[in-house]
Image (tube, rainbow, N blue to C red; front, side, top):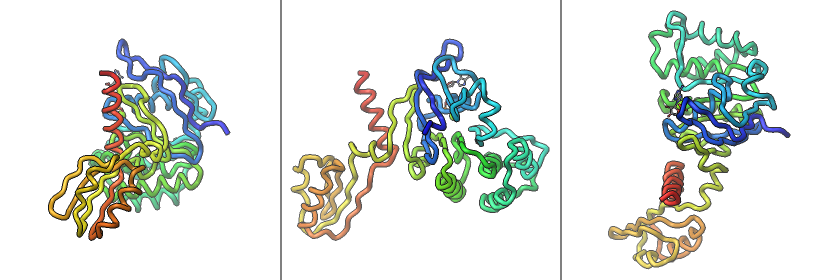
Length: 299
Ligand SMILES: Nc1ncnc2c1ncn2[C@@H]1O[C@H](COP(=O)(O)OP(=O)(O)O)[C@@H](O)[C@H]1O
Ligand SMILES: [Mg+2]
């Protein structure tokens, strides 16, 4: 089966400044791909290139096997997207704008639209000029989610939403995934993609610095353990794979290589555990870890 998105060696120059350097990745049907990186990394530039809004200066990008620049019209019939900055017609109401987007798209589902307006708690009668950033984002999200497409592209979709609405968005993306759609989800807030993405591609300063499944990325990482035991846990500090051990009375805190967790747990069990908390690394921690390594390699 061919990829829904296929980017190969893509580069983009803005004058002398190179915003994308040899970017390559794929997205398949039924997959949610997290596209993560700090502000200014090149996420929106990649997405705008994929949408045929700007033209790459090297390499290639295909969606549904078609060239994103020359076949933009064909491609757009089957994609729905939400840009990073949502600009709306100030004098139209939210409801009117949603309907306009859906008409432009051509595959509207009105039941879905009404349901989404409820789920996102949007008042569709207000003029767009009075909407907050979060509400403008909701309008773009509702229009995209109510469109019947094969590929959904969201550029930092939840940056203006409160946590409840972010949860609604996440449920909607789960539904798309279950329906076999492909989703590209960019974010600089890594926890946003953590719950949804099957795979992540990490971009920094215009370059892909890492990619893979979150499980793969976690493989080489450490869990944080906070434990209270009746007997002293001090001996654990000497086990290889245990780091940053500290203790305060009967409470010990340390990090452990994920692959050493079994050994450490058997040791702990013998010390009569009263309370135990094991926290896997967040994507932020993986990310920092990666950047540290990348910096080490460069220095
Ligand atoms: N039209 C443009 N002209 C010049 N530089 C640009 C333009 N668009 C983006 N850039 C630069 O390209 C880099 C990547 O920007 P962008 O793709 O918006 O990052 P991200 O979406 O990851 O925050 C930034 O340094 C930005 O200033
Ligand atoms: Mg951006």
